[in-house]
View 1 (cartoon, helix red, strand yellow):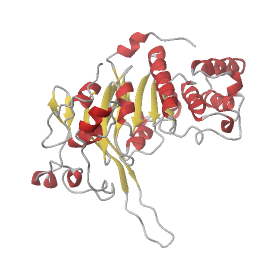
View 2 (tube, one colour; view 1 turned 120 degrees about the horizontal axis):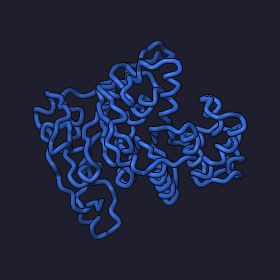
View 3 (cartoon, rainbow, N blue to C red; view 1 turned 30 degrees about the vertical axis):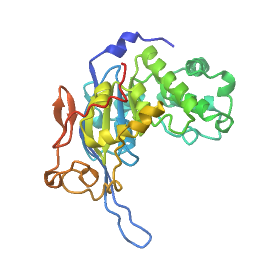
View 4 (cartoon, rainbow, N blue to C red; view 1 turned 135 degrees about the vertical axis):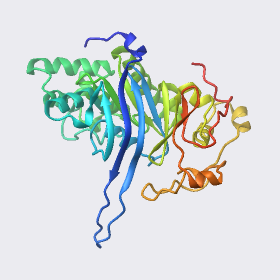
Length: 345
């Protein structure tokens, strides 16, 4: 496999731009004839990602982050908005150009066992993208699979195994190998380590970091675990109820969060030092997130927000620049220095 220069990681050229993206799942009719309301899983989301960058998307379960990743990969229908990839409108692509886009944007799924066909060996699952994409001649497929297995730290014997014969970490490595088979430019990692033990998580995260530099990959890294996000992302987008409520450089996001929801999430990250952990101020959010099908008026976070004011119940905030490119969707957004989680780089 040809290695790309690590200089690609430092590139500032825009690769992906998402504008006012909405994904609405239609209501379903029950056995008794009732129709559930439509569900806006992603509501007017905008962001960009540069070549070689890792953009982290974080938030509670059900906030729409996985749907957002699948929409970018064109695996779910988009209701409105734009997805611009390398200057081209990805939502208008058809035929051969759509196939080329799908080769360029690949997913690593959360559950590696569920994403593999249990009836065929792992190596065969890695070959399938090559067959569908038609990018490797018959004689070179075996060589390509061996290269991919070696790239993610697996052996030929692992490739000849069936999914149930491998550990969770080995299966996720195989899932990464399959996602890399078509040499994508953008890798969307959807909760890639949440189903793994902590020690295995560290190995897979280190693998993704190595692949990023070795291949010059751009990534969208989706997770609900901000302690994982601290170690992989260049910038962090925080989602709540289908919206991005804060977007900032990783260090700014963790050391000086501007949105009260982000501050609450960061306060829940455990600190290894027991003395620091005991002295920390933990922000406990009351209640449960509202239903996306019936969001509250004004700011969607205001029913759980510790600093909510009457304005928050009346007017929906939009993303605004709070501090030199650090944007937040809050009427009263302000930097909140957090010293007990200070990053070193």
